[in-house]
Image (cartoon, rainbow, N blue to C red):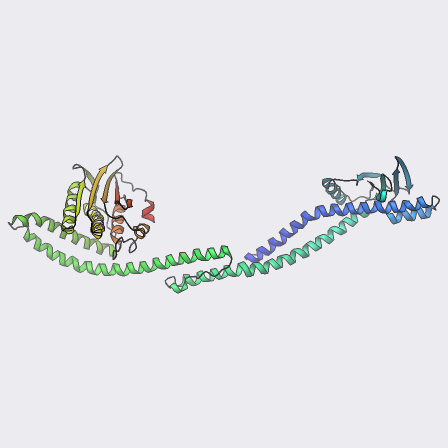
Length: 469
């Protein structure tokens, strides 16, 4: 029981209520002692009135009056005259004097604690103000042990009452907490277990029903997490199915392209000037397509291709890419520009960088074509001591909000209708394979800039927030 939330809450409630009662007990026992001594003073004053009525009362009557008042001596002060009203033998020396005329709270508490810890028979002197104008001062001597016994009995009663109150309060809180808190939490845990048994089933996703604000917030957070997880599992299944289909298509496409490659070898021997100029580019394109199919098949076998790093002259690669995009643009009013130093050489896998830039250029061209307005696409290259930098800039309309929020996520980061967003995912993976990073530099109504950073050192750079989103 004590390992449960409600059981521990029960124990803690009893402990805290008892502690609260202790804090209440200290001033209350001090007040009880004050009332006890004031009552003795009042009784002693009443006993002294009998002597005033008849100064010649017998010693036996005086003794009975003192016994009823539970005091040994009574002294009254009137008009600055101190008068012994009643007296009897004192069995022990007077050990302490207490003035009950307007004592402070601290003095009352201190004296009460002192009385409780005293176990020996003692006689105390108590001073106070007589009631009903019976003088300026009344002073009595009284035994302390009856006072202590009365205080102990009062303390035991308070302790028993506090324990009963604690148990009743704890039981009520136990039932309330179990009903209002523990049961909803247990229901939340049961729902999590049901969802964990079949996370792909959207019907198992929690529907928030709690009325407690904190529990309702927890249910909302759990619902969001389960929605995301179910979506991720579905996407994983889609990717797995797509991967199998792509692998099959790539296998057959590789065979077809291999045959086409044989034909292009013969075309290269043609004497036609136009054919001679276009044939190398055709051969290069078919070779890249074959390599891409082989890479896709390797990826389907979970064999990630590592980049083959060589020194490549960037401007030649850029010129080839821009020439291909100009042909793809056709009559569209798009200008392609290169701003790359002629001597800029990067250490990278040429085929993979070609694929990265091809994806970025294609996205930029399609974004401008969708506006049916003139635009410009520029590839810039520069370097510093730590890295080579490549920027792909366009003057298109900028990425929509959904694409920005889901950048580098497959099937979600597409910027145009029908787009899959796989191009950026592939580009990002290839750049990470080089130890670099691909980031969105800016996007607004004036255009979009993607930035590629390739490190000159062998160590990989830290991933950016965009890549891990």
